[in-house]
Image (cartoon, rainbow, N blue to C red; front, top):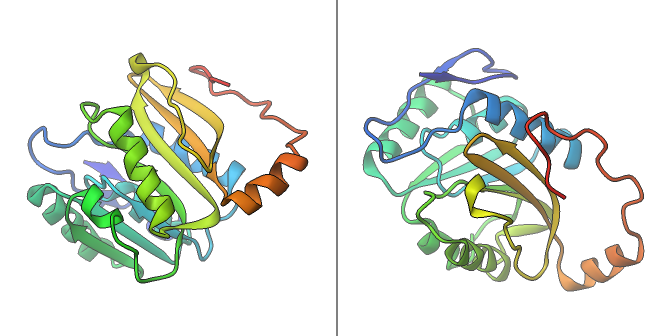
Length: 214
């Protein structure tokens, strides 16, 4: 079992999918994720969140508990998808949407809704960086991401640095044992040009205790 860490549903337990088909994000890593989102994005009030490899749905449901308006939880494994639905019912948080499908199929077509402010991708470690970059490219071209969206990708620490595709800017990384969270900002070309004229003069001064990569 895992739990919602903070917010309206703080302390409530979440079921996890049976078997080894998913790799749940630890409570500690999830707490670090939301602390970094708070630093880079700000309060989640009213935010739209998409989790493309949702597992138990813990990340999206945590976001809703902390004030996000909508969370789309995408999971291809039927057992994990059933766990997500059970967790949604148990918590009763408004704004949750679950979809049983492959991530690459979901993002290949436009969302048909408002774009998303925060995206989390925690694919199986067997999925290559090239495949992840392709999905990020589809998120970009199909209109899934709001200008200025914050994107987080988890990759195996042993795999080395993650290379962001065009229109994404590397912001920060955080290592949690075998996994590393890579944080990137999305800006369309016209916004990116303006951002390059005013670089951040205040780099992060609080590295994670397990290590921070530039």
